[in-house]
Image (tube, rainbow, N blue to C red; front, side):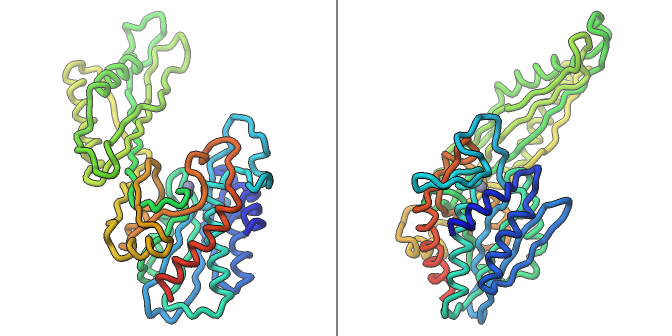
Length: 370
Ligand SMILES: [Zn+2]
């Protein structure tokens, strides 16, 4: 497991380098146990890997759904090289060690150990590690659009780092870009232009007073909105004709993303009625629905008994879970690694935790498929 994890970290599956190398690491590992694997590639080096341990299919299949990609190492200095996969003090350091190559290595090892044993499964194990979870969920969407080849699933396990908490809910994500348009003019004659940054100021003032209408959710709390990027203007002596902001909105299960977009369009219409030169538009950069798995369903109850913990929780971060939930099966997020280490310098996983995850995943497989 340790060697597999190190190779996965060294595969450096950032948005720049793509996922193909990491997919090949998994494929050669699973092939050693005769597990049927398929690498689905597109673009330069994008890849999903799909593996399946066949059974007599008396029961529904269990899906392990992972992501192959990692975020870049960032600007801050690392104490250990981010793709070196250095082992020290019982930990393995590197980008992706926690999010989520530790979980992948544990799930792949569990699948191999089951495949190598004499256990006769009553349902298939399907394992997918998808591309692009950190950017646009392209891999998960691609897998789901091709799911006609898949059996019925009893449930989906996502081995993201939850430090072994059983996560059944998270908020959704709606990323919007708002662009105001103006008219360029020489900076010395601003009266001849329309300043897109000034228009954006009106938008920001309106957003300051705008509250997304939504009741707090019992597990997920409130919906949130934050303007996190702004760009505009090309030179100090040119009236800017364009200004954009990026808005990060985290949504609750009963909310409709389109309603929020309509609210913004209504704000723009009001601003235009006050100032005919005002011009703005909104576009969706990315959206993921919230995840809300019924905590009292059989799958969650059996999952809890398989791992010996009855507490289910909600988390602040977002996963590909809602995409996989569209397959019609309940989704649980459960894996090794501390969530607070994700996307930070000096990310690591405790080897002990990754090993513990192998046992948990085997118990889960046996609970549902034996
Ligand atoms: Zn992740």
